[in-house]
Image (cartoon, rainbow, N blue to C red; front, side):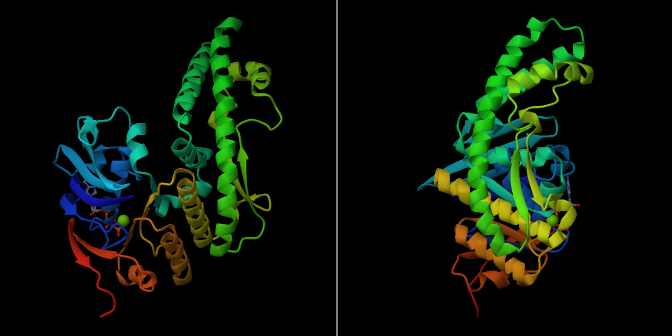
Length: 368
Ligand SMILES: Nc1ncnc2c1ncn2[C@@H]1O[C@H](COP(=O)(O)OP(=O)(O)OP(=O)(O)O)[C@@H](O)[C@H]1O
Ligand SMILES: [Mg+2]
């Protein structure tokens, strides 16, 4: 799977860009503020309808323009799939696949599976449980077709339950239907998450060892309530506390992947470089597992490759990206540090130079 065309209008400083990326390796270089991250954001928009930097749309739209659009041609399984996204200042959105409007962002997301490695990568370790939960759920969503429906049912019943809890005066029977729906959905979510997590761990553990030697590293799945406790019983036991708090304290919405080093949080122990490598290993493991299960590949966006990584580890990351044999977009200020690790590898490289929002494509002809 690869994007073979990417056309962007009015996204930050990219007024009008139309490029034909390599299905293999795209190296994007240019000065600070030239528009490199914005180009990666445009790919993210095609996949998720929004940026990886912010959920807000207005800051993305070029000043004085009313609307941004991104058009992409996705080459997948021998055929081409046109994808289009437009978002306007007044809040209108359009997501189109093969000229047809898609119903939901969830549907759009299923076409273009992406992995992003950028300066925010650290939040996977130091951020709130939500970040790690979303990381796991991304995988579950892409490999378990029923997950999204079940997750929506769990969200709905949780919301209804919380509304009743906040009201205070509760008749027991009012909660019953929502509790029933919540328990049923939660149990299914837990089973799907557990299955994906076990597989992820099996791919991740050998992979991380190649990147970085971290003694005592463990990954475990916290399901959102204590082990060996029946969720239905727990809801009954904690009802008084839930009423006092005005929300449901335990459940699928509290799940987390705990990443520890000898019982301490990895974010507290590791150096920045080690943290980045750990996150890279998690994202590579996810892409690899995704491919093993679905036969499809993720596209990788690596924003500012040299940041936090020394030369040896840049080589390692590139070696792994190469092993995945998937399309990658990698940015950096200087071209040399981007290019060096790929020189030995037999991939079709394209170079893009970004200057003040304009992009010129340069074919890489190897060593002259
Ligand atoms: N809504 C907007 N309208 C116009 N320009 C914008 C808008 N939002 C951001 N910019 C500008 O777009 C430019 C490109 O930003 P971007 O983050 O893509 O740069 P970059 O090449 O990734 O830089 P760096 O190397 O510093 O990461 C910046 O100069 C920024 O000020
Ligand atoms: Mg940038």
